[in-house]
Length: 171
Length: 217
Image 1: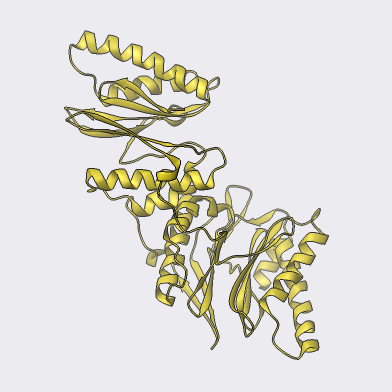
Image 2: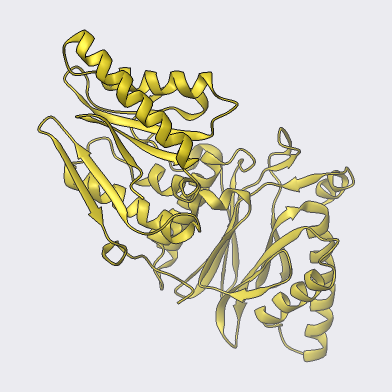
């Protein structure tokens, strides 16, 4: 299942938690963002998209159980990442979520650098996903990576056997 | 140890904790944080030592209920010294781990503690054994445990290399514990490390302000 859902041309969100809840939120925000961008007559800001997601998450906090990470590129502030867990909106240099995320908190804390190149950043993401997938029973399969910058959007799908492998003491 | 004993008489002291052990070229490092908590919100001790020496070159570290862990390690220490007198030689690390396993497995209903046993013996050199909650015994080149360990699975999977030098293994352990302590609210305080090699045992303490800092600090 592709858990990366486009909210607009250069804004994507990553879904976690209940798949149904998360997909519904993404579809609603996609629609709201289209309306908003027509009204404002230009491309929406990542911050607007994240705020729309946050509004739904917060209003229906009791009924929904989904965490969306909103990320994208806009002309005003460049690349941005927003986490919307439980209705809190925070902008962060990077964000992780989902059941597998607990296993890689240490790794991403240690390895993240704010001045990574595109290539290094993609490697960082793929390494983190691969480590989480090898430890979390509910994560696995293939890795989807979407890279967004001023030029455009690149979608990549990395198959299970092409993911980086790490030392496994049980082998 | 007296201080720990009085706290353990109060119900519910447990070591939300991060513990690890890693084998390197010539020895083994066993390490832990130093926080003891009661419930989720009260830190009952900032500086307890969770690394317990059960014999000259065999150490145990504990995760789970402090009272259970103390009871088991006291029994294990006694049985091990008896065993080594009978055998007339220092005990094997595996013997120590088996004693812990026997105690955990036979009392699995009542106990709530898991252990990492690490040490050096003349037969197999440096070894690490994990005795889990239900009484499973497993030997591994490195292992992590405790509530804080979930946050560093990715980090240790990525960074561990077999046959590291002492310095590399020390840095690996300190980094891993610092990362876990940074994310887990029931792990914290200082880092205790014990380096066990053939010549002997060295206890290193890294206070909070000397721990490595990562990007968001």
